[in-house]
Length: 327
Image 1 (cartoon, rainbow, N blue to C red):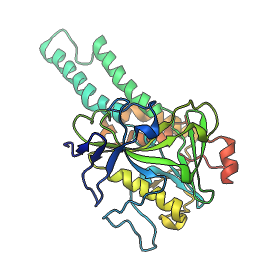
Image 2: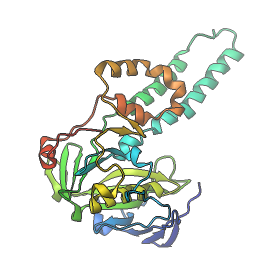
Image 3: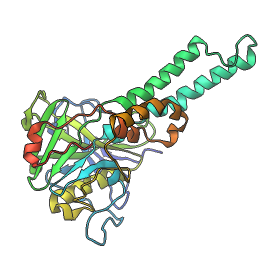
Image 4: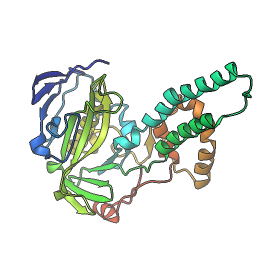
């Protein structure tokens, strides 16, 4: 996965063309301020600004359905639900939580296995079914990594309200009410992306939260970048996510497929409300599925079974006219 960003100047980098679109990343540090650090330090924030005003990204692949709505399978991953007047879109920390789990599986577990076999094959005084303190410590550590990742609180999605032409965000106990024509969204070249930055291009789709839009809670005096989605090597997911949101906020529910689907969806499957008993059973059985985790998404498990979820303040339910806390 080589880097394919073409540096034209210190303040202009051009990404590889994918699906007919080559993003132009420009230094927006003057627009964002000095309070946000990237792989460039605090001197550069390389962004392809998408809003405001809302920028149409022409994609070569055909995302139009026969009904005229926008469709891509990835919306089933990113969307927490569509409700006619508004859609809820998951943030990156919810639908992309696997770094610690994969580190545990593919790095820590092989180390544990190698240590275990070395002691058993080359030392006659170590029983096969005995875990030495170091081995037990590593086993507990790798299980703890998985638990921490799965048990992190599920954040509220971002609510894009077509009828009100507003965007609602609840982030770190601060509530933001953002007019759509002031909503700052940009694709950012992110060479600091954990575990990939030195080897491949990485992109974040950020929604910038400015203090002026904070209506409740503490938000500081600097804008905050809320990561909606991260893409590695190819930027397709970033712009599909954006086009899905843009078309909805421009056209309404007819602009996207199933724009008024009153059903929770997770990775293409219905996501029912699990009872407390079912969640307890799921957590009790989870250690036995460790060997299957390469084939199971930690994000799916967390959204379905993690009871620690943020919920919208009452003000949002009043603005939207519905009490919806889907994740």
